[in-house]
Length: 281
Ligand code: AMP
Image 1 (tube, rainbow, N blue to C red):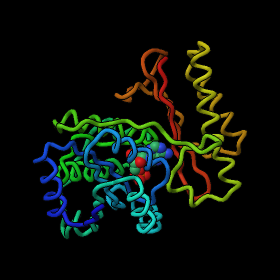
Image 2: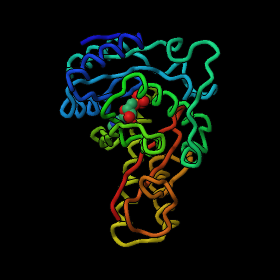
Image 3: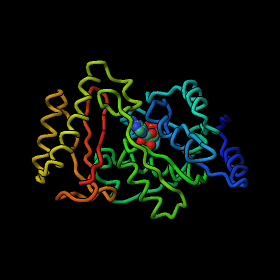
Image 4: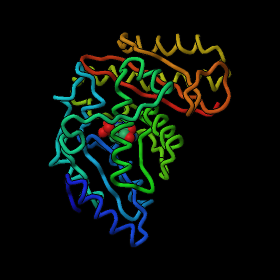
């Protein structure tokens, strides 16, 4: 496994592989790897000849009030895990490499980035699309692997790839959960054991929503109220949104039919937790 922070070196290494007609798979991450990230790496490993893992805590997707400075970082452990999973190349650029002084180019998608997470974190997706576009331009993978855990991010990337004509296949990977159903997240390190127990209510609430839709309930106001009830029963009362959107346009859902994204965000301690389920209704 090779690790480098140099754009030129990454380009040369990937070029060498491409000249041998190797399929390149990219797994973009912010590091502090857990089993969710590893599931993306494993899928890439199964489907591609050469797996590139990027580890970069991207300042552009954090607002000044957010946790960029204290975001968990553990490069040593990440490199060990990556090595164990058979990653070929780890790209670990510095902030200076990705955003040199006076940096000014951003990729901005309208509409789909203005709702849900984007309504609460207005500059977040501009940072995500910019860094992902840069990684795509540097690495030029055939496929890139993203977790459904961040469903809106995935929908935004799908839109960017389609509209900006990137010749890259975007692979949606299922959300990896702990035994209580809580979607794994690097930010769980900020939570106490009692808070982790409360957080388990998120998945229960989503499952309740799915059950109601499957049982034929079509009043989304009622389903939302039931989801909020379940969250409250677990002590989760600081709810940013509970939303029903068409997958993957994220247009609002008015009645059952097609693929529906049920997504929610809650605040617990210092952390915002997001989760979702996509169901065929
Ligand atoms: P992050 O390091 O949080 O930026 O995440 C990097 C990638 O891992 C993104 O595509 C996430 O959606 C994905 N990911 C994070 N947590 C999970 C999880 N629990 N299950 C599946 N994918 C995940």
